[in-house]
Image 1 (spheres, one colour):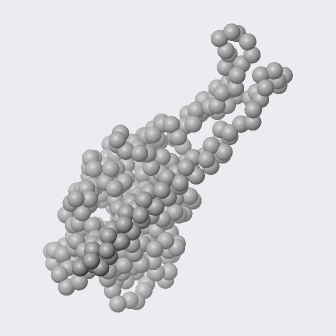
Image 2 (image 1 turned 90 degrees about the vertical axis):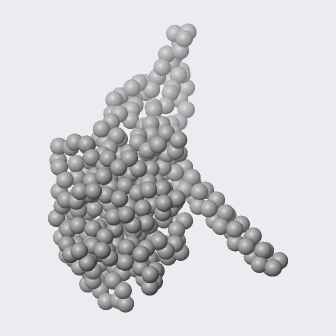
Length: 333
């Protein structure tokens, strides 16, 4: 009995330590990005004496306006050098659509704050395809393993540096982005021949962790087919419709498949029924058409079937009322 209690204590301590390390890594990632941002935009500047005869150039602010980097002191004497504003390091937009409306910056990684009580976090903003998209999932090259535990999917994982990095933003962050539900989620897809397709879902949202991040959505449109609802047939929809399904991982089985675990068979964290027609977090096969014991690839069954694993996928969101001058096409892939 004493040995059992000791093992339980060790396991709980290890889990707490792992969570602390993960939070620290996230803070270090954001801190590193801040330093790179400051250096890139030359916010670190060498000291210049007030007695210098050279006239400093004007700085460009984060909103594109120019400001002098000299300010007069109260005594009317020589100016003292000040730094320009730090742009997104200070202003935390709720999502990429607010950032797009405010600055119209290029696609890239930016910090946002969907809720006032939250700490800002890093996201990839797709400012093409009409602009304003906050990306919460990307598959590109298969170097990131998506067969993860519950904690990893809750907190997020992957790389957040380059345009083609793969990642899952994290269910807690996705929940804060989608909780109001008045949004449009776009799913961009590309096969191994370079053909693109997409699906759109209105009022896409998930519940909180207490309810296992249950998936809810309403109207579908697009060209790739409504794979989240499980296809056209009633029998298919009964076993594969993902609306109302809770999130499952290999260590948290919340699906309706009584004979096994969909997450374990499909090597992914996802919303499973009994099991799926769509699974964008599946195993990355580099051949398109694949053979395996289970249909566990990166699949969108209403477009390419369950035995064709896609090359690129993106899941992204913006407000339903967002207006752009470009419109939604095949999207950035």
